[in-house]
Image (cartoon, rainbow, N blue to C red; front, side, top):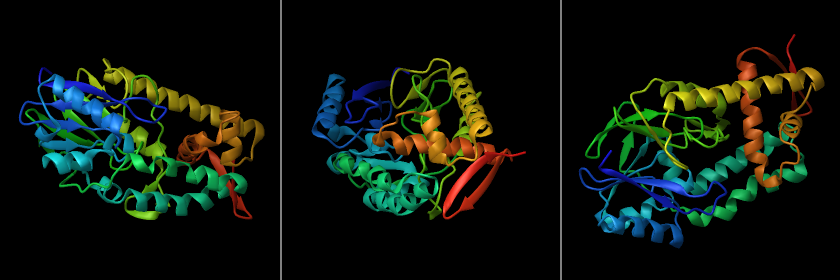
Length: 320
């Protein structure tokens, strides 16, 4: 795509830089502008200037999903340029009030993770850690709510593909025959973590993130895109091959969880997490338990686990 270039925007997160894609075929479109920070804004402005553009030139901002390293600076850019902000309808409420979303997650997951076996002495720490990063995103109003199958005209038609799992409201943007902008749905160097969060339609219930993620991966398998342009890292030159690798990775992990339960069950999700990821620091317990619970969800969907609850704590064992 001659009318697209990438700016690698710094973030404060372990994942490193985020890819902001700039399409300039019809006005100026940014896909994922990055977090709200001086370093990020400076890198974005410098990258635009190298191609003869300014932040005030931006006509639209496309948000692939509501994680702050992708959307954090969208509000400031829209305020400066008058850009239209576009995101999936399931991300709208989260983007409009990320503090409220964080509080919903705290309310739901502190008792939930304890029921999954997390020691109470760790629960507050695990749930409160994201507070450190509140300064890296500003609330943003979505001007255009996107749905599956919608098309955004950015000089080239971008078809919206709803791909929940890594986050609610996650979308890929398909430029048929050219590329697919995948956000964090498909990455070339790591397997995206399907993080637990609240359901967009019912914030008192959790997502079943890994089953959702695998279903959504299949939606982009066989798609008409010779290259994937991910939210982090280098281009994915074999989209179908990478999809197959990630599916296989999760199926192998699912079998490992089944083998752990067969050898040592019944166990809590926290017990299984400790087996899968020994010595996991507190900063990584939430994503670690998200992945474990996701694999237990897969086993549950296949009727391969027996689930019991006693004194408010849930245990899993291999069925049969």
